[in-house]
Image (cartoon, rainbow, N blue to C red):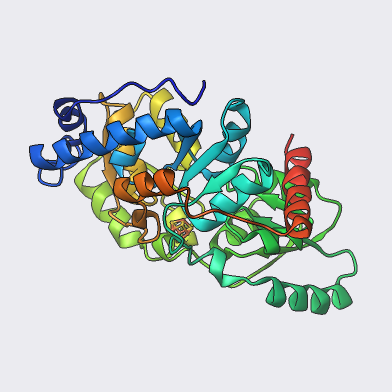
Length: 337
Ligand code: SF4
């Protein structure tokens, strides 16, 4: 894959793909406007030697200009494979763009909207973590800190290892301690605790999108669509996970849905993933819990064009933070290999 192999797209093509998701939102007029922006973005990508990475929860029209679509870590890793790219535009939230910068320090990393934050990443600061770590070390001298990738770079830098929702149990089991401070998602910490014999001390954070999903919503869909497969993300509450056929990261949900013999699925995570599935797996049916992340949706096609045109907003990190975060990310890769 290189940064220049996208071709242009017509308004009719766009409408054929996107109106399947929402006929009203993607009318011909909107698709004509989007087609012209897509054209400009593709041209600028060639000029700037840029790649666009889009998280699974992005707006569907963003997928049209993306070189890679996936979860945050997958995207940061894929960016390293694009040898001729000088610029990375990250269509996702701030901590993800930071991770891309940690792993690609020599490249310019852009986030189209600096307000695209994350309730989960914001629930732990480096100062609060340093304080809690010190308190707990006095009680558990072997304490290790495992931080979810949904954290800022300075929190990662204070951690012994990072983890994703896909490898959290493996990282916890492999790390050299019986006592783990797991930050910042309490729901993911509960899920990990249910799979390990180690002591998990959880931080009190949550993703506001996943935390609001309740078991009644799942039961309503199960009752009205017998045989539906329920795929839930581990950032959901324990009582929701108890109703799932499989608990999976977003990228694992895509693989599962493609391989499964089932033809209908309830996707219990942010709505954008169901949109991606509807576009990529047109012969199966996907139902969603209709929860939108307001931070993810701050990224627009117009904002992405502006970002590429004016090279803004650039992600910068102190060397010590970048090196510390890189060490925690690399430790994760070692422990989960
Ligand atoms: S879905 Fe949740 S974890 Fe993901 S960016 Fe939005 S608030 Fe953060």
